[in-house]
Length: 258
Image (cartoon, rainbow, N blue to C red):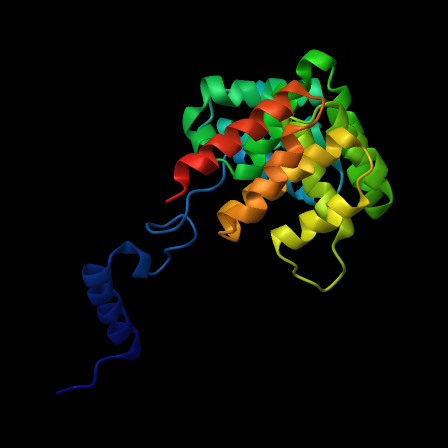
């Protein structure tokens, strides 16, 4: 049989591959062929650029890009993601009213995005909602103290003492634990709280730490005896909310006893 010309052989192979595997194997199939990802929309490009700017620390430019995207295409499929990113950027800028508005817009208009957001996102929202009636002043104090790190233990203790039952107090207490933690160590929650307790001087803050320690000994260490001691100490504080919570914990401890 006469030898087929090389060009004819290549053409036959291309036709067979096209028939078996589809148009992406046909000569000339390029980036726009079947199986290739669709090009990003203008909204997606703006959102991705805003997230890059945020990572680079250019928060004002990131905010402007997000607002532009949401104003131009408010019903885009990624609008919920954009609102959450905008809220995070506004929070980082210290624009707490705008951050709360962005979170509430997400909750009201983009339920899937809100349902699937991170736990950290929901903590930020709770902090904003918890402090809105005070013009976010406790949150301003908390974030200022957080930025100071270990040098702000006294400021954090004051935040706990002023609003011991609040979300802000819970976050301040976590920051106090971080402040007493030694580098390269991984102490238990009980050990951290005991270190915080040793440094506390305000009676209300001390009671809040005792309440937390009681729960830690009970739930984490299965030590109801020490839990009772800390709950009892917390119940003696001159703060009706903390005293009530401590007495409720004592009742729950008695109920759970074998």
